[in-house]
Length: 309
Image (tube, rainbow, N blue to C red; front, top):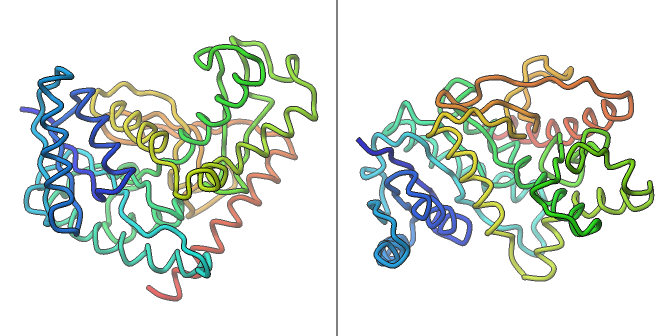
């Protein structure tokens, strides 16, 4: 019996997720979107790529949730982008309503699914989805660190003119400009970055990583979608194949790193059960302070949500 993955949200990120899932033949795919015809049309288009690209999976587009029943993994990308004049709290509350509605439907139709959240503000949406679904924390995970680490690796490789495949990078914290790229634990084929780049260059790369999403928006006029989709699919693949990859993901911390009750990006082992282990890295005083600041930014969002729940 094939695996089934539902992608909620048929926009750029969701459609790219569906495309990657199909190309990798990871599962049958159900694409859900409220807009009549959108998921149906994109699913049909993707299905017609199969004979050309050589993949053979069932791709279904729907405006409802009946076809999603029994999904193994659900990737939630649905939500509103931030618009001119919209405050961070406005976006938070608008997307909370979207994620709440989606999660209720998914919990009803796929009570054993693992949820992978992509909707922003990511860490707060993970917290909301876990509360609404009642799923154990191991089965509600946020995609952020994989994307942020990929950006960090890309910028490091470009600076050094080396293969991105040789670059290992660690990014902790919330998905935003308070994230914590950990230079000390990042390397190129085991060579510490501090031996390859000077302090000023490293600071510039760290800053660019923190603002990586904003850089894309400035150039493109909309949010990134190829890399976020690829990052989400890497997580899905590790879950479905029980690969047990160690990836930086947003997970609910209960005392680890001195943080309690918040979704924050840290290294985890991803397998068939979802988050199977949280790795607690020994941090320097400066790194601890930066992570605490990042967690504080997440806490501010949660405090706003709690007043509306």
